[in-house]
Amino acid sequence: MSEQRLPGLDLELLRAYLDRDHPGLAAGPLRAELIAGGKSNLTYTLRDDRHRWVLRRPPLGHVLATAHDMSREYRVISALTGTAVPVPGVHLLCTDAEVLGAPFYLMDEVPGTVYRSAEDAAGLGRDRARAVSFRLMDVLAELHSIDPASVGLDGFGRPEGYLQRQVSRWLRQFEASRSRDIPGMDELQRRLEQGIPASQRSTIVHGDYRLDNTIVSADDTIAGVLDWEMAALGDPLADLGLMKVYWEIAAGIPGNPVAQAVSPAAGFPGMDELAGHYAGRTGLDLTPLPWYTAFAAYKLAVISEGIHFRYIQGKTVGEGFSHIGGMVPLLVTAALETLLTLEAH
Image 1 (cartoon, rainbow, N blue to C red):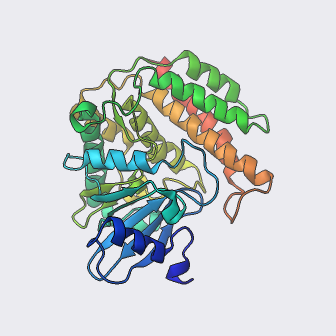
Image 2 (cartoon, rainbow, N blue to C red):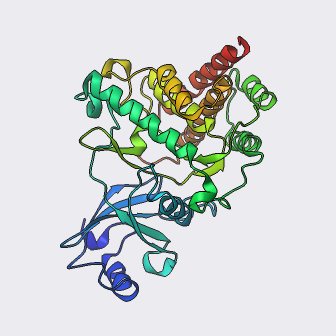
Image 3 (spheres, rainbow, N blue to C red):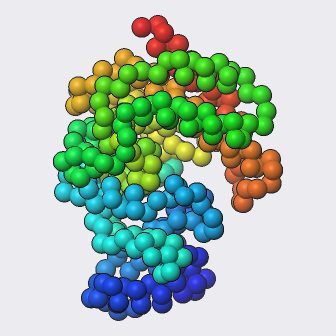
């Protein structure tokens, strides 16, 4: 595929825009490669004779008005620049859809490794896997210690009622793709609605914090946190609960499409140890964490059921979707079992 004909990126139109609105930024011909795309935002490496950047834009075709918000990602990354949370440097946000057909932003390419698969993590060894894990938790604790107002994000959202809105939203999401009876689902929904905990703190929430949404540098520090499209002001334990699902629950389901790099066999510590480290850094009481973990498992079940629903309708593209539906009842069972640990306290 010619670089001039990359889906969603016309280099001639981009260069004309840069020369007009950001003269001197690019030096020499532009070259690009698509590094991610299809189901989420399209991401490209972009380079000239002196620079290497990453360009992000929404997927092709119609998208929901509130989804794939480039301005949202750009605002959060810009706000966190210079804090203890490592983010790529950002250069520009273009909201003029006439340039590439959709808004986009340009940020620095961050050197390092994204640990997505068991093969990626196989060479780490126990000591390095532990070091990366605790640094991952340190960065999350740093994010949750930032006063949103201090970085200009005090108006970023409505932290009051965050958990209630989240529960209502995902209940609606499930009803939109309900196509079969899932044992335990109704009970899980009821118990989640009835057990919403009181938030201890309002912070910046990443919304999808996990190992493969970060770049790890050669010295095993976290060089960059990526994919801020679900960021909000809300309850910090929502991030920790979701991370626990990726780290332990989803990782224990054969064939799952997420969290494939993390396993005890690869030397990664258990989430209980990591959560204890996080609690020591933040001072948060983790007693209600099972609710957050159960809710995160429910969210992943709803997402998986939506994919399954599209698959049985013949609306998915590519391979690897046939087993997704099998994850849903396993996640529901895991969520209910997690809630039992909360009741035992």
